[in-house]
Image 1: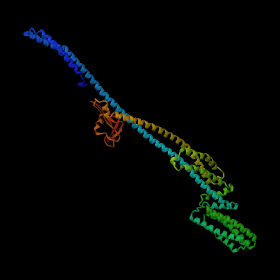
Image 2 (image 1 turned 60 degrees about the horizontal axis):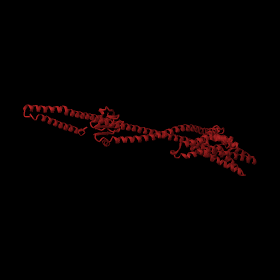
Image 3 (image 1 turned 120 degrees about the horizontal axis):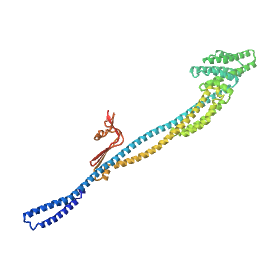
Image 4 (image 1 turned 90 degrees about the vertical axis):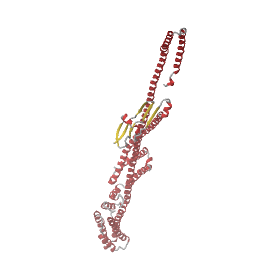
Amino acid sequence: MNVNDLNLDSYSSNMEDFLLRLRREAEEISQQFESGISSAENLDRYLLEVNSFYYRSFHETFWPIYKKDIRDDINQLLDLKVQEDLLKKHIAAIIKRHANLFNQVKNTSTRLQQLKLHIMDQRTSFSDERDRQVLELIYGFNEIRAKLWALEEFIGSLDEISSGLTVLNGQSGSQMLIMGAQSLCYSDLEDPMIYNSYYRLIKQQGYIFDLIQKCASDNNIMPERISKIRSLLVNSSIELPADFCSFYEVQIQSTSLRFAELMLLNLQVQDHQRLQEIILEFLEFFTVWLSFLNLIMSYISKPGFKLIPELCRLNLKHPGYLKELHYDVSSTRKNVEEVGKDMDDTKNIDFLYLSTQIKNILEFSAPLYKTMAHESPVSEISLLTARIQQISLAFSVLDSRIRILAEEHMHTASIISHSDDLLTWLNSELELLSNIKNDLERLLAPRNIARVWKDLDIRVTHIPLTRGKTLPDEYLYLLDKYHINTRITEQMDHTVLHEEGDIFIIRVEDESSEEIPYMIIGKKG
């Protein structure tokens, strides 16, 4: 309350009323003493009466009323002063509550933002896990593809060799092939020295075969030609592994020399009919032998070369089996490759679709290959058995892996879905908090506060706090005043290490207060 608020008219009115009354009463007293005014005694009495009247009038009439008015105004002024002080404190408290609410909103927003970043990191991690599951499924499937391709190539090679062996399916030819192959199949024919020795043997045996053919086609059999054959057989030496050399000497060289001796003997006794029979038998025997040599040369580089003895026995017991097996494996691989066409772009592969396609293949193929692995023809070739068992085991492992991956994928997809829902909710809440924070910031702006309380001197100083930045020097006194926590740091002195809001300094007239959030300030170590 100020001077303008006082009721000054009441003071003037009281004074005027008092003076008018005083004048009337003074005139009445004067009239009583006019007749004897010359007397000194009367004059003293007159003056005494007038002074007494003034004293009584002022003391009994004016002063009590004036004092009462003064007292009432002072009481009113004191009441207003108390109310004004309360109002200032109330306004300061309201502003401080708004500042505190601003800090709560800011701190909550910061925590929600950190939670959002954490959820986003976790979502990214689970998204990577989902991609890993797809890749693991692809790699498991590609392992099956690679093994099926290798098995198909292997069985195709065995079938090719097996088909070539059919020219030697006669009993004698087969036995020769089995024995010869057994003696040679573990040799390293890719070694240049061994390969060259084998090649020289083929040329030499081919020359002998040519001479035998000439004997068979020429009616005039020359003894010199038979002697040449015999000489070549006797003097033939080969630089091949010992097992094969023994086979050659026992099975080929000795038999061929016997045919040559019989040819010479029948030629001497001139039994031409028997001679022709022996020549034809010799030619038949050597045809099988030379076919064997050429067959070996054709299949040296094939992966099934060392299995020629087993293939010979398989052809005798189960002819055509390899063709059927090759057809089954090729059919499976075609189905697998159809699914594999969708794997060119791994980013666009749908786990559920791919796993369903693979399950369809496994549902048909797994039992088939399990049966194949225990078929009696397969047991004739141990290496083939092992490869089919590997495929069967790979199918079983992939089936188990798919079940585990499908469960993991379902769990991962559920977490990602819940994360997306939570992120949507967090974005909504953060937007709401941002709007509230902006409203509070506008409400605490000095211009808006001055507009609301025009007659009061109100100042609000907002000091934003940011982690990693230093506290301004002019506010360092607050550290001691509020016993703010400090921590040794390698950063600059007075760096804000942690904050849960901003500092607000509030002044309403002569009232002042601060809103200080929880914070940790760094002290240079």
